[in-house]
Length: 385
Ligand code: FES
Ligand SMILES: [Fe+2]
Image (tube, rainbow, N blue to C red):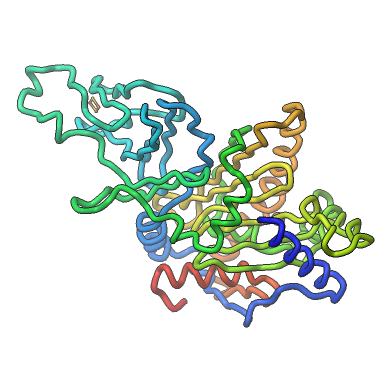
């Protein structure tokens, strides 16, 4: 957020605290529990939300140097993201054109990718450089057997991939400015490209992927579920919400916000007291945690509505003089709150949904981010419920 926006959000939060109010959705929203448990719905989401749209892959600092790469499965598509010698980031299906083995694993730096199965070799632009048995594969045209290209973009320190092969007449680029719309200026102001990666953690909770996102979209539960962890630091059930197309931004106040009150409006610095939670549709939560960036990405299970994979990434400022132990402490708080409080409860809720005893859940008007998220899903899927 820029200064002007920070002041505006700070003012809205103080107004809500004083008036015992919060930003409200237009109406209550009822969602079918089947949205969290039905295999047909899960399949539709994988096809429409995780194939057709740009998916956030992390900050640019995950691939700082030429040759840096990152391989991960995005809702069933093995993706290889590489920074080439020309500095450009490209994405490929991580599938060898011989018999389909992944040509790279995890992350690292490489001049070429040598398939572990029979040694076919590809360069950083996905070109097949050579096979290992010239006689056996005589007649295979190297030029048409490169890795399958996926659309990708790097913009303002953000990396996105659309996990669907580029069509014959299609550009391998993505217009992410248009997609993120009003959210982009906010994200640019965060200078995301100056935040190197500190840590990543991956877990596989037994919850639908949307639960993992829902967890971050309301502050209503903080005083209850997080009584013993983060509740003393936040003002529960008070927040602002602004939508940007399918995406959104929710801001919540730390209890320390009261310290700005003695200052005149124009001199107030709300920045240390406001947490901005950006929802990058469909599956990413990027949190501006005042002195660092915390990113959660949730991916649906491959064939299962009841499982997901969640990655937590912590990015710290490049010019910090704080020791690693400080960032570890932040990582630990995030893990204790989300992985030990939110997700275990979510697993119980998932069981309840699958029991068939109830048909719907209700998102309150005081949970506008949740209402927007689930409305956006329906809109992107083209379904009424
Ligand atoms: S599957 Fe890659 S070389 Fe055989
Ligand atoms: Fe929570």
